[in-house]
Every structure is written in structure tokens, then in C-alpha cells.
Image 1 (cartoon, rainbow, N blue to C red):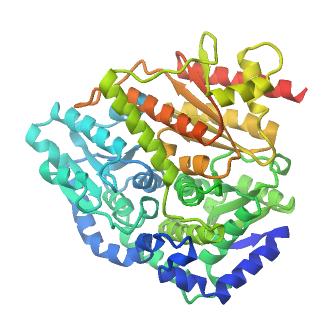
Image 2: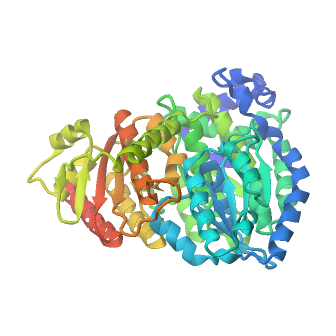
Image 3: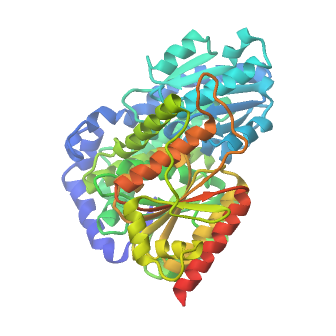
Length: 576
């Protein structure tokens, strides 16, 4: 059961729980009543509520395919997807080790050329099976990933055998569905049209990859069904874990405590990235939203503002307890912050955890009075990226803006409005440190800072950027987020653009000395990544966000180290 300490928010939480009980709101949720939200089309997107029972009928087919792939000697599975199609499988891949000779699962959800090349180096193409996963069947990234690897397999296999190394997961009658049939993919599994991408983890989009790597998906689904019963329409609000967690999130969001700081046990740490998308994309719109803060290094209570709540997702069992987390959570709670403890009994209960959070998120959406099933600002970025890639197809280049400042290894870019504001904050001579200082001095109390990195999501790059976000968190006492593009565009990008205008953004881009062409296209993967970064930045500035782009020229690791030093100096000057 969820335990929480809410301090001054307790009265508001109790009042909201009583409202959910007295007004039968959980029953209305299970009856797909759109008036619980904005009375738009929410009732068309609640198929996930009864998904697990129908999904059980697919497990025999999934298991048969898994045994066939293993018997045919495939050693690796690469899932080509984005957002709701990739984040749950990514959690399986990072949480479970391959067993009993089942293939190892890898996820590709980046258009960064180095990320693609390093993945390809890690697998044996002759013994790799590919899952092309896209609900709409039109998502740019999985489609061009497929084009690339289909072409690569044609160079190492007989052409007539290539289609049998692929399968598709997509809704019925999508372009991907048609393509998979035309090219004789080994299998096609369909999604449910009434289940949106980020609510699809317990559908074929999550269960097929789990099954192919040898996980017991029957157990996952049956335990998730028990969680659905615990969150059911006839369970009192005070005993319903989905209602309790959702009310805590929604009430705290309305009170301005909208930085949902996730502290997750190491054994299930990858759950946090899935939760980022669920919370950010579901709630971040109409100037409202919950900002998930995942993988931010733990700190002592004084570094945390009053705009946070802390969710401790604890994998039970003595061997799974992280005693540093236990100590820090206790200190944070003692300091008066809101803390909710959400237990996960064991790894097989991860499916139950997914359902719990889905229920809690739509409860919070009702309290925030938003539609938790749309993502208008994600679509805006996709549209702009499409316009830019079309421009490249016609002209052979992307439109280039002029840096506001350049030095040998770094260029700074922003739009005219941001430039004027940064100049107003500028003190001392024009140089990288002072420009960075001016940008960071635009941070206000209860803001958050996001580092959006359109570079390879390598361990070394992650470590360096984690160190940099920690500098900012400790100096400015604000929440910090870290995302890698284009992955985050299908996730937290929604709340950054459609949520409250309290974000300060540092976008990081780089050159692509090892670029990769895409068969059948004029643009390369590097050009796609550039278009995605440019589209993201343009939509941010159209939404009046405080944003600065840092372009690293040359070696990325050296550039990240230099950026860290620049920010360190800027913050130290700020503290004098």
C-alpha cells in the first residue's frame, strides 16, 4: 500500500479523496466518462483499462514466436521505435538479463549516427532479429531505421531471407502494417486503436518484446490484473492505490508542487524513463503540468525547493534496498517535504506498477482539468521536423541561423527575443562564461532547468551531463532534467512546450563527422537529427521559453567537459 506524508497539503489531499469517494469518480473513470476530464474525446482512449485480459489471449502466439526465433539461432533482437513503442521495452532490456539462450534485447530510439553505428558494432547482423514498432505506422524514426537495417541485411543475407528477420507491431491497416505484409515480415502483431502509445505498455507494444527475450508475460499480466482490481471502481478512494497516488500528484500539481522527483530503486531504475513520458506527455498542456525529474543525483534537503514532491519507488526485499536512498528519503521527509512511498514487491510486479501509474496519471489529469490522452505540442515538433526534412529534400541543406557568439570550439544560438533578454542580463565582456551566466541568471525560484542533448546517449556523455546538471541544481536550488534527443521529443518534450512556462533550456548540438546515409532518402541520419534539434528549438521559442543552444564543434567529450567548466565559472561568478 502507498504510504505518504503530505504536511500542509494533507487537508487538500483528504478533501480531494473524499470528493472522489462521494462523487463516484473512480466508477465514472472505469465507465469511460469523458466529463471526468475535458469532455472532449477521452472516452475513445480508455481501452487500456481492460487490456490485460484480452492480451492474455496473445501470449501463446508470442511464446511460439519467441521459441521459433531462439531455435533459428537469433542472438540479438533490436527494437526500432520511439516513445510509447520503445520506453517499456527499454525498461525490460535494462532490468532483466537474457536467460535460457533467449536473444538479448536492444533498443534503438536515436537518430544520432554514432548511436546507430555503435549499436550495429555490438550485434551480429546475420543473427539479429528486428522489431519495427510504431502505433501509427508513420513515425519517422522507426521507418528510417527500418530502411537502413533492411538495406544492411541485404548485403549479408540472401535478399529473399531479409523480410523473415523483421516483424512489425502497429495498429491495424497502417502503412507499416501494409509494408510488413508486402515484404513478408515473419510476424505482425497489432495494437489496439483505443490505446494511446504511452498507455500501451501492457499491450503487444510492451508484451511482445518481453516475450521474445524470454520473460514470463503470463505472470506479468496476471499480476497486473490484480492491480487493476485493487484500483477498481468499487474500491473506496481511501483504499484505492491508484486514486491515492493520482490525488497526491494532482493536488500537489495544483498547489505548485509540480516537480515530481522520482527516486527509484537501482534494480528497477529504468522505470523512471517510462514514467517521464507518462507524466509529462499526459499532463503537460494548457499551461499546466507535472514535470518529472528522473535520475537527478540525490542531495541533502537544503538543495530542494518547496516546489517538489518526492516519489520513492522501492523494490522490496533486503537485497534490493539501497541504504543511501533510504537515508536520503528519510532526511527529505524529516525536512518537511512531501514524500510518497510506492512499493514494488518484486520484478514480476513491474506490470502492476505500470498499471498503477496509468490509473494515477489519469486521476491527476482529471484534477488538473486536462485531457491526459492527447499530445498537441509533440505533434507541433513533429510537423516542424517534417517541414525541415522536406526543405532538405528540395534544397540539399537546412536553413542556418547566425550564432549570437562564437569561439573556437563552441557556438551559441538563440532567437531574437531570447537574445535581447540575455543581453539585458549580460555583465562584463562578451564571452562564453558571461553569456552562460546571463542565461542562467534568468532562472527564478520554482523554475526548472532542462539539458536537451542531441548527441549520442553514451555512458560517458551521460556521466558528464549528470555532473553539469548537479552544478546547476546545487547553485540555483532548482529541479534539473536531462534528456537526449530525439528520444525526449516523444516524451518530456510535451510538458516543456505545453506545460507551465517555468523551464530554462540548454540545448546541446554537435557536428556529425561519421554520418550515415538513409537508403531512398536525400537526407542522412545526421541531417534528421539536426532538423529535430532545430524543430525542437523553434517550437520552444514560439512558446516563449527561455532557451539557448550550445553547438559543440569537434570532439563531443572534450566539448562537454568545456561546457561543464563554463557553467562552473558562470555559477561561481554568480555567487560572489
